Length: 288
Image 1 (spheres, rainbow, N blue to C red):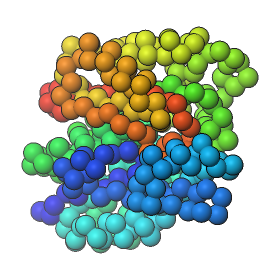
Image 2 (cartoon, rainbow, N blue to C red; image 1 turned 120 degrees about the vertical axis):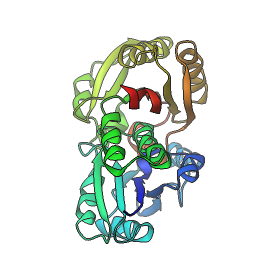
Image 3 (cartoon, rainbow, N blue to C red; image 1 turned 135 degrees about the horizontal axis):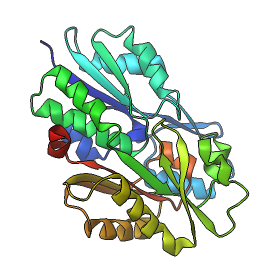
């Protein structure tokens, strides 16, 4: 029986520590500012990206990795007899999963593409479930089953400063219903069960954003169990810190990540966003 390898894409917003801890292969999304192209996390980090975002006259666009990029990644890390779990951003939000599926048909190893139906560290949390299962030596079928089980148990919710970036980049999804009605209203959005961006709540004024996000977490993931938590932001470190502080009052957190949303997701949500991704801890998920 061969080894199990983990591949994802840069929309997972994994930290370098998370990538190195589990030896995860990350295939970068391409960020385009006009005629200039950058590999997400390779040629352009989060700080550099947000500085460009606030100074460039053109909005960035993203393009998915090609099937050939995925094939090269699979063949680089896996041999015949190995299995690759290729875990990606929602197929409703990007063509990345489709590229991975096409590449899986021509790779040397067996490749199992997985649609997380979410984005950013929502993907990241699911990737880490798979990676932890591999690290603990679970059989392949159990690794796959637990990874798939974690998908509906992972909740992602966030607040954006403006819907402009989602609208212009065609990722606004069901949140389009909020356009033209905002004024001082702040939209709270989430990754719905279909894997689309959808309205979760509307609050009046910035002061209500953190309470709404915390309430959303408590409603969807019980505080009566240990959890894995990611708090993310796009140049809104103060908001992320406040959100984390409030969540720590309610949850026993086993695995915590707090950091910036990378360029691939930042291109669609813009600066000023804050959000959270939460799921039961690995042991809680395995027992449930």
